[in-house]
Length: 211
Ligand SMILES: [Mg+2]
Ligand SMILES: [Zn+2]
Image 1 (cartoon, rainbow, N blue to C red):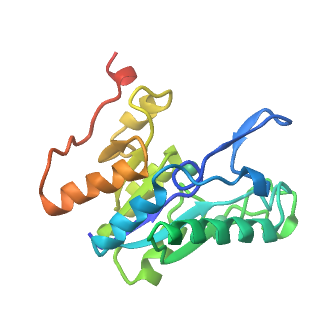
Image 2 (cartoon, rainbow, N blue to C red; image 1 turned 90 degrees about the horizontal axis):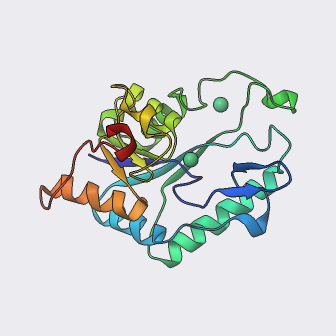
């Protein structure tokens, strides 16, 4: 394998509960952007294995009027600098900024890059000069697994073993290669798989799905 494609929200940074709207979503404000534990170390581990890294992220917040493009850039600077302080390096960042029901007309479209479509993954692989079959796709949502699997990537789901959505990951085209509780664990699973060492528990069922 040559590269790792990473979802952003819920993988790199924490999701945020927006009290006013009563929804869990991406951060909209500066104070809401917080890197998840051990993310810089995880990225560094991937770097050390010689894997290229790219973020592939749906960011419809600008289209929906939740934040300005400058805020998305500010999050990006903060993310990259915190990862850099931990010795890690992200090669490229790709966003889908579209949404079919966007407030902003210029971003209102049914595009090919919004996951679960595979356009963003195709662009990322092309720019990293790797094939999609040489990529891991890591995400915490069904659209990440669907896009990854449609694109021919090896998928890793970030989630809890006893999770609400694991019932949906049992379908053959959604089922991830691995379930990891965070990016650090995902990076270690990748290392085990690539070096052929250690115990790799492949295709685990979640407790709910088994019940
Ligand atoms: Mg996510
Ligand atoms: Zn798009």
